[in-house]
Image (cartoon, rainbow, N blue to C red):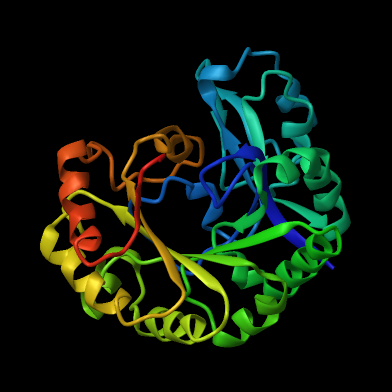
Amino acid sequence: MKGLIFNIQRFSIHDGPGIRTTVFFKGCSLRCFWCHNPESIHPHPQIQLFLQKCIGCGKCFEICPVGAHCMIDGERVFLRELCRNCGKCAEICYADALVLAGKWLTAREVMDEVEKDKPFYENSDGGVTISGGEPLLQADFARALLEECKKEGLHTVVDTAGNVPWEAFEKVLPFTDLFLYDLKAADEEFHRQVTGAGNARILDNLKKLANSDKNIWIRIPIIPGVNDKVEEMEKLLMIIKELKQIEYVELLPFHRLGEGKYTSLDMENLAKGYEPPRDDLMNRLAKVFIDKGIRVKKGNE
């Protein structure tokens, strides 16, 4: 069995407790317009072209089996519609201008990378986080990987948006110590407008998860014009305060670090020009939860 993975990030300190390795699964069931990992959305490998890194060596022209890399009117061009995403061009690109986002890996191949930092996990109460995309779209592989982690005594975290069948959760529950659970908006129809899907299943899964013995951190991305109002936090508070097992609410401010990725994939960035929320706003939003006795983390705290 193999899973489609687009990144394995070592020394991660923002995806659960301690020092962690975050394994990013490719494919997502939502279409949040502010997504900062657009390479995570589609469930197949994709070539990214970072044109500013290109040194003009021409190696990709020579190796591409379908002529997707070429010169037209003196300009270096990537014909994405011809590309088969075979990854040959990325393999020989010395400058890393071409990157294959998404590789099919076995659990053992992922573990070979994960185990490199085992001493750091042990000294920091860290471990392994699976994220995405939506890792539970590949629930069988997620289970296999988490099971291998537990065999090695590693702390495990699943970062999910919850828009999957409950059966996917049941597959990973025995091998998961902590869930990072994303909430974007309280209203069903508004949630559909900004993420491409309603939130009924997401909230139902969250309630079921909260009735298990697993600890949960609620993660709320703070997006300008979407949910950056005290009133929206109060709506989410009404949902959260009824749940057991909630350790923290994390408020994650919008950032612009993913803008170059959209260009590399020839995708439209619908959040272009948006600005990160100010610290005073983040503090006001956090106060909604703090006043009700809920512990809050903000940004990179």
